[in-house]
Image 1: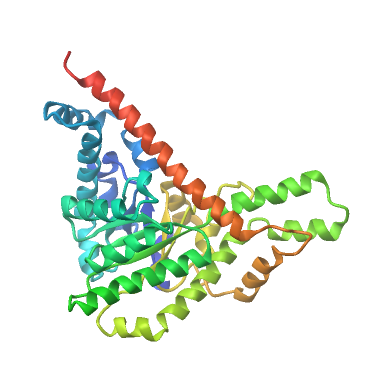
Image 2 (image 1 turned 120 degrees about the horizontal axis):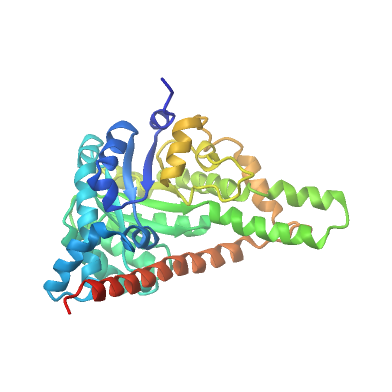
Length: 381
């Protein structure tokens, strides 16, 4: 009998969530099997995932026709499809939520990416989504933009679970953590229970390496004048995302040791776990499980697409590594400033955040367009 390495990871305090949701895996029983037999204890979704799930899939046609008969606009038909999938997934994961006392068992849904820079619209949609979907183990995804963080603070204070997404820089993670803390403090000051609220900070990985590796490859392609410079550049390839994540984890430890956090912990507050996102390896030269193996540790979540789940179950090398080679991580990030390397990591992170929002807006709009076409096809003449 082969070993399923996913089952070993929980021993180190890390939860595995899946970065995928479709009606097919709900109806077929595949999701239930993953939860019960492969220790998948959460689900995340985003506009890209739903575009792939809904566009061209006949499984949704009956509900689309029902929406047409009810006279719903396309956007409301979209919501009716997605909200039902989210409810069903929440119900499948409810036993995990209860068994873990609200640590795991969550399903994440993102507010429309078109409002990523609108604080009030984000707050209003987060409230509406949480109320209309009506599941305790729902998490609302809010992008970690500057306008997004006041929204995080507000909805946390109202008792809504939040997954802060599209975090790239360590600074953005720190700001996110304090937004969560301020929300809890506000709620506690009103005499309300803070023990049932959960949040994760989704820290993106592979996109960082793809961006920086591209810059290094461009420098190497132009030619470098000595082997020492070439060695410096090659030493950074494929290493920045993991180093950046390890530094973020050190910041997490500082935050949970602070007096402000400890005062909330006494009242039953749950830590906001770092969630490693964008964990499928993009470069085939790298291990397909490197973003899992290198970042296993206490109070973390790793969210994996289906192919990476299978790869990890087969050949992850499970050990507690999130706090290994931390000095090397700081040195690596510092080495980006070396004149021979000259990569501005802050500019990279800003670029990735802008790109990240765009990567959600485009499939969201594409989904609306394809759904509009399907509504036309299915509408009675």
